[in-house]
Image (cartoon, rainbow, N blue to C red; front, side, top):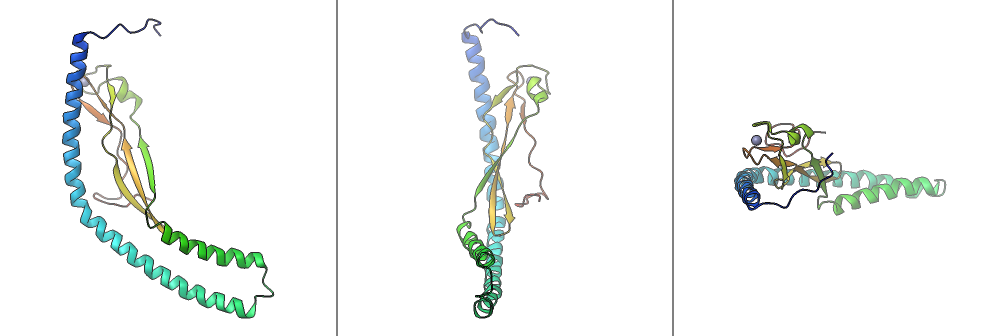
Length: 188
Ligand SMILES: [Zn+2]
């Protein structure tokens, strides 16, 4: 609304900003420590889940090969001449591509999800009512895994974060919905 440019920042203002930044860093440090503990606790669960998935994938792949092997043998002997080359290409190539994909994508792809703050929480501090809430560096993203047929997706949730410089109240965007606490699986 106002056309005037902001006045140069005073020493007091800079000091205040430095103090607020310091508080922010302290809060971030505490959050990081907490997250570290959480991650350490989750690691064994994750390893066990990944081992189970790898085992199941090998079993599925083995069964698929058995079934497909039989099918393509039959196809090769009885219907090579009569089959439409395009049908054959579709079925066999798709199976082959799928199994290649399974192998290739075992290095789970990453999907980044950004969670934004409600406008309202940025406009006014929910603790003291100050209008000076400032966006701040977000916490490190939390990671969840989702198994989609053939591969794992690593989904990283980035939650926006803001601080009120008057009361140091920190707000974060809503976390992703979980199926159950401690779950490493995203809801479908
Ligand atoms: Zn406040």
